[in-house]
Amino acid sequence: MKFNTLLHDFADSILHLLVRPASAHCDTADGPAVTDGRRALNSGNVNIVLKWVRQEDENEVRTAFERARRVRVAGGEAAALADQWFLENLVRIHRAGEGAAYDGIKPAGTAISAQVRAADEALERGTSEPLRGLIETERWPELEKRFRHALTLKNFDTDDLVAARAYMGAYVSFFKYAEGHDHAHAGHAHASGGCGHH
Image (cartoon, rainbow, N blue to C red):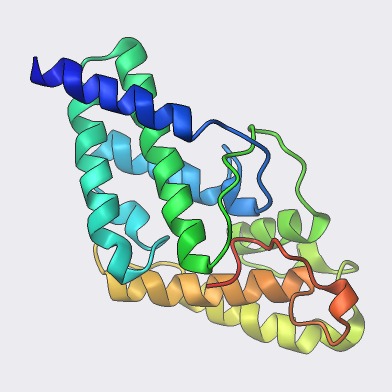
């Protein structure tokens, strides 16, 4: 039966995508990429997640999305398996586009750096104040500049992938700077950022 074969393929794929510790903000189960992945699955609109991957990776994500949507209609464990399979693939493809290794999705509630937490809050509230005291004074003007740029692009149309990717570029630039990726001293940079390396 076709459905059983598809379900079996999902199970095999999940075995190769077992959840292991990861290293980036976007790799957490309650992080922005996975949150968008769940929204996309629930709404049926794959465009919600396409901003997380390069244009050349769109077809792979679209194909995984459609497969997951077909299986999840069965409900129960099949739906849960399909969702997890899609989310794991989304994060894997996203990380590959960054040139970073994929280490799985961290559990919800995994600790993230104070700077990343504050940067999230800043974008949510529309003010950079949550980052005050976490960023060196001399770096503040550049941080504020990147924050304002991201904020101006934030309210894009989900179906406008050009605008969505423009926001992601600004978002990543802001997060990388907040975490110290662009700091003059290499010792302050982190290999894993707020979904950095775009």
